[in-house]
Image 1 (tube, one colour):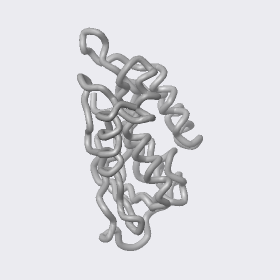
Image 2: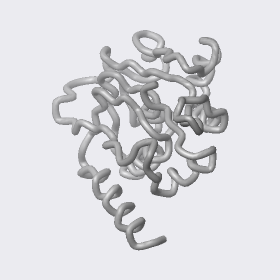
Image 3: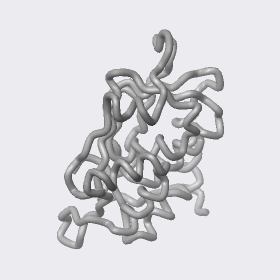
Image 4: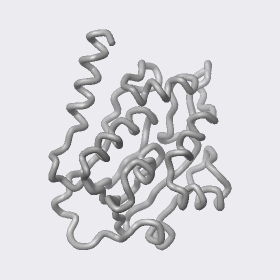
Amino acid sequence: MRAPSALLAAAIAAACTLPASATVRITSDPGGQIGPYLDKLNSLRSSGQNVIIDGPCLSACTMVLGVIPRDHICVTSRARLGFHAAWHPDDAGRETTDQDGTGLLMSVYPQPVRNWINRHGGLSSQLMYLSGGELASMYPRCNGSTESAVNWRLERQHGPGQQAQGASAARAARTRGHVFVGAR
């Protein structure tokens, strides 16, 4: 790894570090590139922290359901998960569905979520939302106060015109460049 790449990777890792005792709360996350989200979620899983989904968790954020153990996740009545197919920019910069990235997403989701997605027509360019009773049937409701939780959101490190970094970003890059599941 070249020195600038190593420094960038170290900076990203430092930015993603949370105190070991924190419970993490997702209140509004629009998603982004698959690679950086997988890196951050894997780090969060390794920390053993609990996750409260307390608002919109869209696109790449939804991978939290497959990366974080179910017994470390709870949802509030405000939780709303938005799913859609992965995409990448084509040569003209237009968004085009990325089948490999979409397959990766589906492989990350636990079986009950995959079943729900399939019952609702599968992942497409249109957002589909999982919330309320359907979500509560898959994940426990949060008990008690969520006041002490640390708000979490992946800071966007790069956009479509910049080079992706990190191990998971490299995996995503193999599926024809940048692969996004952020706002379309």
